[in-house]
Image 1 (spheres, rainbow, N blue to C red):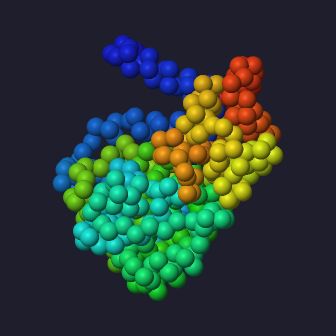
Image 2: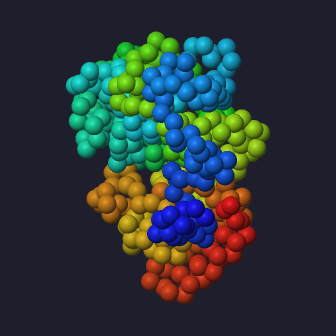
Image 3: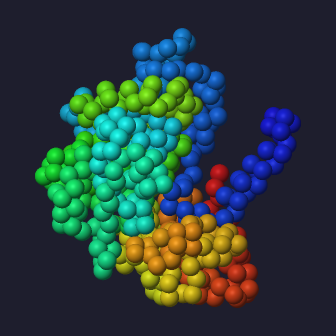
Length: 415
């Protein structure tokens, strides 16, 4: 109400965005819907505070309550991801502004310019910050890339080991943004030990699945684990860095004062709330449904003639190959957006098309599962997507899709 009075233009745009989210089907794998409690804290009076430093070691006064909030977030993070007997062996930094700075803060803390880092190639499922040449990670450090098998599109750990032993990277990054199968952290650990590398896992996409105990944990195998706090965790747009104690001092100093000033206390508070929600039994039930929904959606797309990279999924996302449909990823993204289905264009491994008009689309089930949709709805959604792609110029198909989407979104309200 106050915003409407002070800035009606922004108020109007926010209302439009809310309506877009409420009346559409969000299938972007990196998006989710935060709870009202998380959003309440994100917009709370914590926004007003400045608290450079860490709990009990601040450079500003008036931080006694901020300290408690940050300590709660750290304690809850350890409780979720680590067994109790290892809590004192790990540190958690909840101050990174987002996932990309978190990754860079690890690199800058532990490496020197020109050192070798080894990560999954972006066109084959990796992330910009895993050493892509347009990113600082690829400009400042010598980036060695690994990818997937050209036939199965699965990670080939024997090939990764060969590359690692030949190149001797100082740090290996395991993790992906468009890989639909489980990651074998134990295999990566053996590779890292053989070549003497530090092992870092970026679990930004699968953190919620790991938290629910439904994906192998990286913590027994890795030295550092980074993650964003939205996606499958359903929190605010922030990040966390977990590090074994031998690395934690350097990493903490690189977060502050190395790369950041005062933490965003409203985000820290919202992370703490998000983690409290994850500790409830309902969260594991939610993640089970996310995985079940992804499997059914994948099966429906396959049955409708859509090719899938790795022929299915073991997590929350699906990567579809559209080359035989006559559409590229950009065209499909725009086609589906026009009726209220939101997903993103994505490169597929060994993609012959350019990144802006790639051959694939990436689809995720975390957001629709938050709305309460289950297997029955995934069959409907999968058929909608396939029908629209195969009948991209048919106005009747698009009109019918809009009707179905309206029924679904009304049946499963967002807030």
